[in-house]
Image (cartoon, rainbow over all chains, first blue to last red; front, side, top):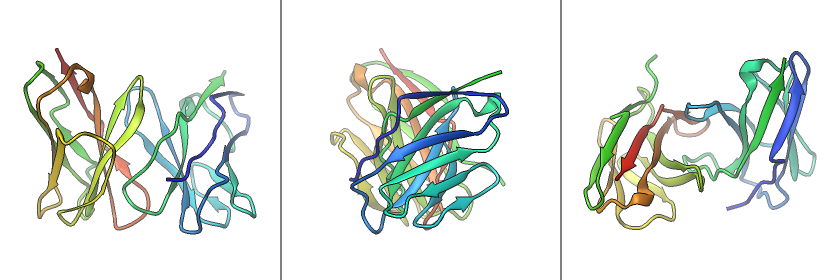
Length: 109
Length: 111
């Protein structure tokens, strides 16, 4: 299973954009890039996923490098409720997700 | 629509016992996956079922097993419990492909 590399932690100020990076140099052609987040005392929550093109939804945007070896999750305006562990995962659209350590995002008021 | 439902939410067992956890997926979802979450190992994939067949399996001993019924509901079983099996067990369901929806989990404590 291809692995991803994320910073252990990041900080952001409330109302500011946040860019969460992810490296996945061994990504294969069939791997989708998924992002999930886990708030304290809750199960993981789907954020966004994409294959090659940039993606937008109501929660976030996903920017995928042209060579697909890296991607960035963008939260346009961080709120205190966005404080969570964010996981970048490669998946071939099955139920098998291989979670790494993720990035713990701290949002300061 | 109703989310993924896991029962029981909390349970306490002693070493050597066995436990069965239940997961009811979102209506229409045919894929059910199970995960174990511990402070030391993080989130680890256990297995995935699709249309009553195990489609993927993680690196867990044979004491961990599961099944899926024709209505897509799933159960997982852990036999001969060990202290290290204390964890939050999470179930997720999905349509054929795409995003996974997680339940709130079953927290197992082994004494």
